[in-house]
Image: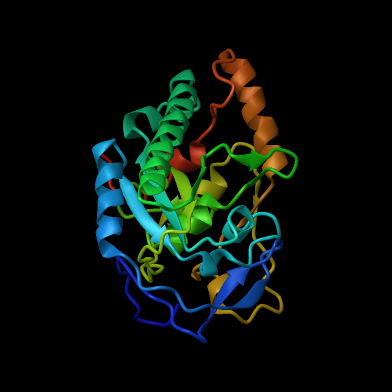
Length: 284
């Protein structure tokens, strides 16, 4: 993002502007944006209030143009050809429960929050349909299990909506909760007003000593190669920068931990050390 640009609750991208997306291996691609129909702030407010009423903690809207360089099949436009907006909602994870991880309590919390988000995005999708729009909910466990890739990247959508920034561990850090929240999204043809990515860096590895990386029990993180990358968004401190994650090793370790703890849930998560040790966000 240009230096000095601040986060905002909404933004409209004009005809002929260019932005940057990410490729499957982290490479940068220029993406020509389209003229976006003027957003409907009253509908934004209505959906925001609905999300808050039913317990959502974070709400934002991402422009699908900022997500259009994802791998084919995993873009908002692949789920809905006429997609105009990606709604992002977040639900915080209990700080006290995160502190117990790895534990059966966190495993159950993780599963419960994912289920909560499934219900919340269903309510949002229903509200949009009643307004005459199409909507596709993408829950936190809506993914390709072979590739271990979400049907769209909830995390990139949250960053594109201006709700937070990536940490080294590839989780989105928010000012409110650091990495301690889960995400759900709704892809819709409703012309909502999108937010813009935040310029505020929340990941400060020189201050915490790369706590998430050094404390990972499975050692799944590795620094990405930046050779030949000129776009500052993909370099340290950039909007889309984070370390590479060995997803298979992470899944294998978590399965082992679940067995050691006494298997609890099908969709839970028995390890979250990278959430536990991250100093970002406010703890209650």
